[in-house]
Length: 130
Image (cartoon, rainbow, N blue to C red; front, side, top):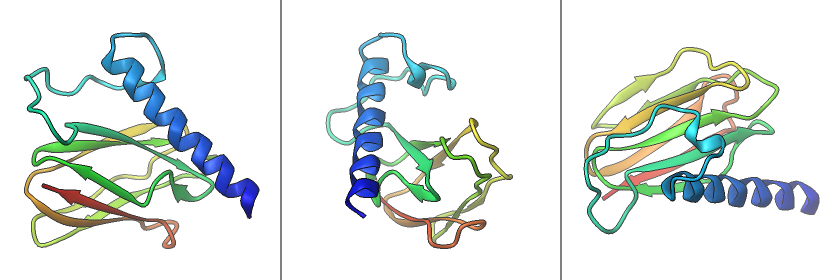
């Protein structure tokens, strides 16, 4: 159990480092997906966050972003995934996401969103938009 938790923590930090490298203009894996809007970002919560899907789990259980922000879901697993969001503010269901593919989901309004994988129902991610 400790090894699995350490591996998830390592992947989480690696995703954060890649995101920071992309923001600094350095080449890296995070630069492979289309760039988010180039509008200047106000201080505070990020405009985009990268979440990895690996070992049939999201790399984190909680993400905070600002309204209009997005999450890029990278399928770093050997399995197909599918992102599903249901809330009073939006409903979204992706196509099946093959290993190695990324999708981006935008969260338009402030609120709390529950993100799941329909293929792996134990996968949950809470998104807080504020």
